[in-house]
Length: 119
Image (cartoon, rainbow, N blue to C red; front, side):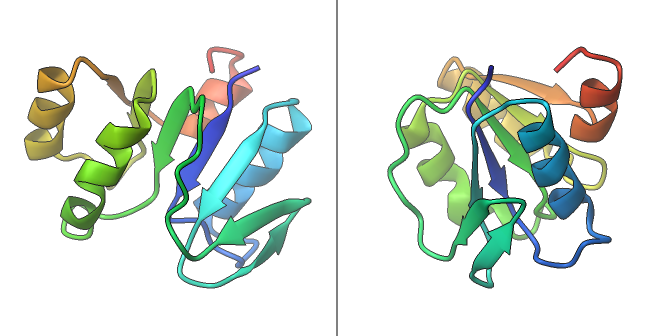
């Protein structure tokens, strides 16, 4: 199972980040979450401060490209195996930084990947 950080986590049940947290957990993945509001979703605590998580396999982004620069260094320092750019988060500037740091990325939908067992 892939330890995943959901960046841009929401407490609102209809938000894709919230659905992703629930589905990841249901599929047996260890889930960490960062968002603007503290709370819990399906047993996953949403942190409001950036923690130095270890052994993160995947960072799945739910932040629009304009908000991402504040997190570039944080994500790179986590040294994940990959970053998933969900629809609406595509960011060529960040792709270049990830390439330079030898971090894989995918422009994909976490929910679709889970649904077709390609996560």
